[in-house]
Length: 250
Image (cartoon, rainbow, N blue to C red):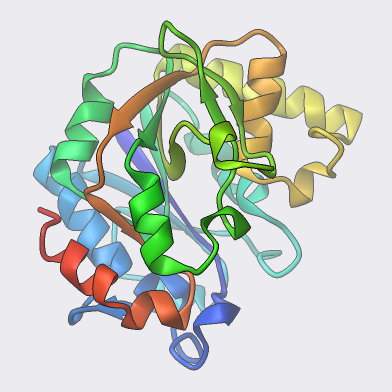
């Protein structure tokens, strides 16, 4: 099992904290987001930690087991960043965003899933979102789960809270077979120049996940209840909810 951390982002909404470091190196309670995440991965025996940087990538050297680079970080998105590590997309992998921190319990739940593609979903998202922003719908995405626990819709703009059964966190697992599916769908989309109406260079991970679902591939929801943070803005960084939640993430 290896981990791939998507950490190319500039974090413009975190200015001035990202003027001299990439988004993932912003500190919460004295420790950076990515260092906290690397510690959690190590605690669960995942020592092969590949970081894909971009903005101020030189600041990341010395962390993880390998640093790769998305040299076009300022004009591409998450899917493109992931496939900057295409040579590492073999075997069982954990993929996570660099601007989150999650508990070891949440990671354990994901690791315990036997599905070829599994995605952690926060079922208690609404309480967290309402403490982060005035209108939870403004930043949330649709997510629908079938009666047997598979994701049927993800990453669309919701019209109401009823379209959100949980919230995508940016933490997922692919078995070796799941990785083959991921690559097959992406490379075909790249050839077609289209991931659900977007250029592959500008697609979000949720776009690629939804495309896989559209093509009949199963993606298992791994439900969790809190136990994580996301830092997107200065308000997130300064908020009491971030400070209180980080203390409970172990």
